[in-house]
Structures are given as C-alpha cells and as structure tokens.
Amino acid sequence: MDEDELLSEADRALKVPIRSECAPDAAGKRKACKNCTCGLREELEGQEAPVVKSACGNCALGDAFRCASCPHRGKPAFEPGDELKLASRSDESAPVNEQAVLKLANADGGLVQLSADAMVDDF
Image: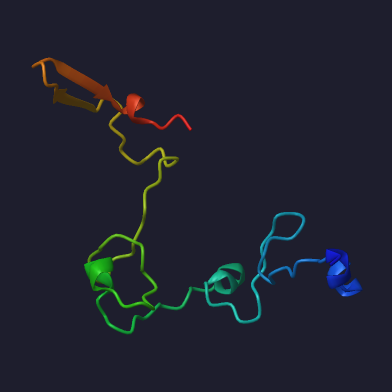
C-alpha cells in the first residue's frame, strides 16, 4: 500500500499555527486578550490587578497544603497578606554567597572542597 494515498490534499497543505491573542507581536509588545485573567489588561491600563482568591485559603502554607486550582501553586510559602516577591539570580540586590564552600571527608580521611563554581552543570 502506498502511504501517500492515505493523505488527502488538506493533510498536505501547509499548517499555520494559531497565534494566541496575548502573545507578543512582531515588535515584541504584548497586548491583553479579551478574557484576560493574568492581570496584563490592568497593567496596561494603569489599574491595579484584581486580588487573586483561592478556593481553600491555604495559599500561604506552601504547595503541600494548596488545592489544585491555587493561583500560588509552585511558589514558596509566605505570610498571609504579604506580597510574594521572588529573587532571581539576575537580580543584583539578591544576596549570593560566591565564597560558599562545601567540605566533605572522603573514605581516606582526606578533605574534599567544592566551591559553588564546581557545582555548575557543564551541559
């Protein structure tokens, strides 16, 4: 059987992916979609984003206590009422201890030192 006979002309036509309404345009600017729930519409209009509510009320306790629909899922635990801010490695105000050294004793009684630079993956 010829595999090409199984394909119709519609299958062979070039498929064009559907672009999300809030995806960045050619200039790299994002615009809010009509059913915006991420707060981008309020940000663009200069309004304050709506307060996100959870169904269970355990958002501040951490992922182990959060419901499946929690808007804070994947974020660390925090104090109720506080705004959660995550520090990234690119944030220069975040404290990073470059001199951190891990010391391990090997089987021969010798000492092995690993610095933070030695623990970076080389992939």
